[in-house]
Length: 215
Image 1: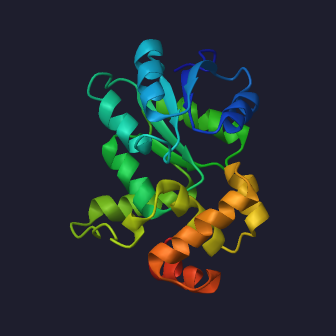
Image 2: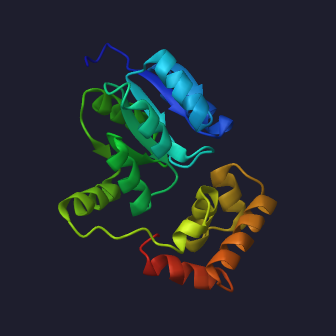
């Protein structure tokens, strides 16, 4: 793709404010042709608009980014998918790459960096945030890929996001701001996580997450 050709992009994320923020950051560097907030809506919009690149959130209602890839790619193999997520957990990265995404970057990326990543993916390159590339190399160079953790599998996608941020030392207010939810909702998710994992407090949660290389 030449420098004067703007990639056609669809933004898929369940937070409307985040989608608006991405639009503002990208400005006129790309041609945003659609957006969606859940899996079903994403599949309809992507197939209708046929973008060059889909910016795809990993955790969403209806099955998440992996479900979108599973539904769309068989019919639209030329469309490129770039995962854009708050999660930098190895299992999330590996799951969407195996499902067909061409790259994975975290939401700490700048607008300029995101534009460059979109162009590279549109041109057929694979793009990863620096620390995430190692996860992919390790996963695809090893025949002994770890099985799904049954304890982690008890948590909903949103509970996993909250769990990882809390385990990294985020305060409840910081988690709420990062995920665009209320502090009370964060408290509810933390309580559910501790109950499901049979842990007593956030310090035990941090150790649990560290043992599984989730933070």
